Length: 402
Image 1 (cartoon, rainbow, N blue to C red):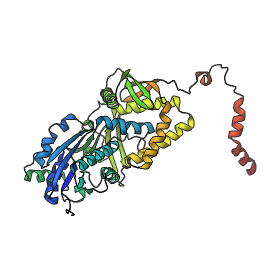
Image 2: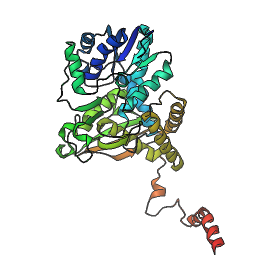
Image 3: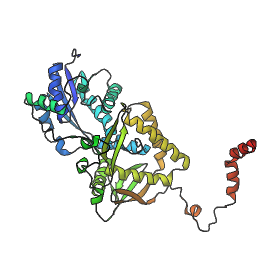
Image 4: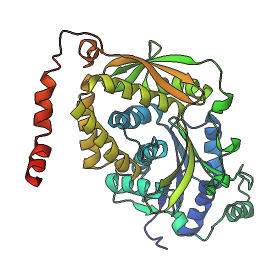
């Protein structure tokens, strides 16, 4: 274990079991000062209540709580939404998008307090270690990185609880809390427990935010979203900041059981994992943006946007936020979104968020051309020449084969 030249470490601290144990472990094994850094990205306010006191009780010399909620949604979530990114077709990247802004803010605190090293509580099995450390490398490569889960011999929840008990460090954690959860303004994820076997159905304990769709209201509810340049700017006619819009839609979506997915995904480190994700407001936003795209983007532009989304999903999931490729993908998506203005009515009902009305001043949809009734703008006979040219290569191939 390399402890030389480390006088001060900034730890990404949550107040949970792992990071509560990391503070005394760092002091014992590195013999240095530990500064706790807490990111407010919209998690349950109860998780932040008394977090400074808890950090100090664990041995931190100071605790910095930074409010990142608006910046998170405005500068990280909204740009990803413009690309249409969905990891492996379903996951709306809630944890993935939060990690780079948390790590960036942690670096800023470290530079401010003159720290020598950065520390995170991500395990050696997950994606988060890559996301944190890739950000560190991009923004502050001179700082050392400490990852206790790759160094210490504490391998279980029981061991961590016993470690804290021996040092008289209080914790609210217990053996009964069997699920691993990550929460921010965009989503909440649940892993572990019964979910570790894909043959088990998720039970009620696996869902935190959303009403069971089977128990959701029997009457649908409609919500109107205003979109400007591929961003939701108003809900039901009320202009709102990105975070405020998400907050409002989270409440509406959760009430109707919107935004639940239960998936097995491929982690970056090679293993598969299962999780239940709840993204109620985000699901409503995504469906509204796709509805405007259907009106505004031509066929080739939409195809390109889909390719951007696929590539962006891997870039974000893999922790490559502070890279040229992410900037290039985002710039392309922003260009496509220049004319993505419109208004969409979403119907919320029993777990579904369905776009039932949509309009845009930039719409390429023309009822005159699309009608099945009689029209005076489209000559059906013109299609014959188009088809002959479109299928010319097939015709030439068939002739040669004959």
